[in-house]
Amino acid sequence: MSYQRVLEEIATAAHRAGRRAEEITLLVVSKGQPMDAILKVYAQGQRLFGENRVQELLSKKPSLPDDIHWHLIGHLQTNKVKAVLPHISLLHSLDRESLLEEIARRASQPVPCLIEVKVAQEATKHGILPQEVEPFIEKVLRQPKIVLKGFMGMATLTRDTAQIRREFRQLYQIFRRMQEHYPEAPIETLSMGMSNDFAIAIEEGSTLLRLGTVIFE
Image (cartoon, rainbow, N blue to C red; front, side):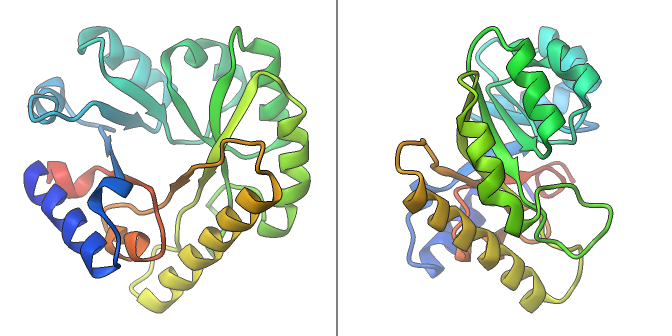
């Protein structure tokens, strides 16, 4: 599917859900993609790109336009924190206290972060468990070098759309509840929805989609 077609699909899904397309931001996941493919999407106006791995992000960034905003969406090892922080505008995967402490120790300026919440049923998925979100937020808000912007989560990889919808809905409910509980925090981003489930994510309240395969296939 072309980049422009994906934008049309997002707008269609938003309209179906009674939302405006402008409420939903597209992050293009460039994992594994060559420079020319990334530049082709960039030429159509895309400026937000995401990578799963620190090494790949750091290797691509110097060769691509300076006005690209890079997000790190994959699991971040503590020993990679220092290297990646100066190069990203948003971390999607704040998922444990040791990472929180390392970011706070290494950051030279406040780092915008999303807390990754584990709503999927797969053991391989990372994230804070739903019942542990609020205690973790308390720790995050005590760190002046962390700016809590919202939450990220992945649904179980399944063809059961009802299960996907339940998991996204659970994460949306956490998002809304934490907005109400912590009005002093700029909690405005809900990152959920990938190439196989983004229409459901839009219907369930996502504000930021992470799409790669559907754009580059």
